Image (cartoon, rainbow, N blue to C red; front, side, top):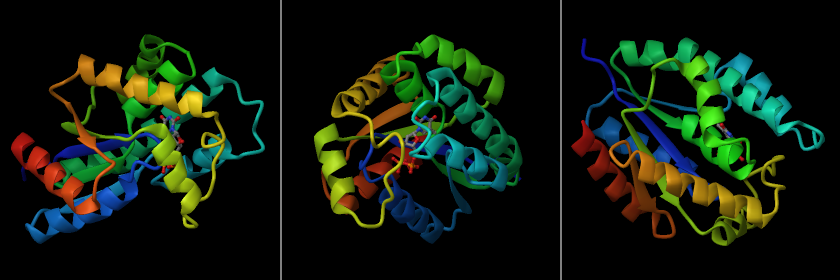
Length: 208
Ligand code: TYD
């Protein structure tokens, strides 16, 4: 059986990743492709527990390195327990966030250094990397306003960061885009979901 495709979706808060993943999975399934969707941090019981610890709004004293290590630990378990077996079974895995989130949030915005965070993650993910990454770009003020207007989305510890933090997250992603233009493709997330879906499908099917 042929190997599946590992697709990751990245972006700042309120970029619309969840909506895009839902539409994208339906579209690829309609084309007869076997799709599995999942998310980070979480996706399996051990990683969901780590997620609770990381995102608990009462954990205001969490050290930046602790945060980075916990994300990497959740990533490792999720990768070996869920993502790799699915890819080996020929599935197309669409994952909400992966290593680029750690590089942008912990490495750049938190100031731990992108190379340091990359090192931690090399240990966690070995040589596994996405085949293609869609980065949904949105001005932070627009993304945060979308979250504030949505009753479906619970506020987490990272949402509580100041707008300047979210601006840095965006700068971090833009740096990653410069470093890996072959793997990471930027989509304008301020438009209509159907338009973004069309573009996402085009990029993914081209990368196949
Ligand atoms: P989530 O509720 O999934 O937010 P979103 O809908 O924006 O994806 O919470 C995940 C939060 O964790 C989000 O604020 C981004 C952050 N995060 C990191 O800081 N580093 C990481 O490596 C990952 C995977 C997520």
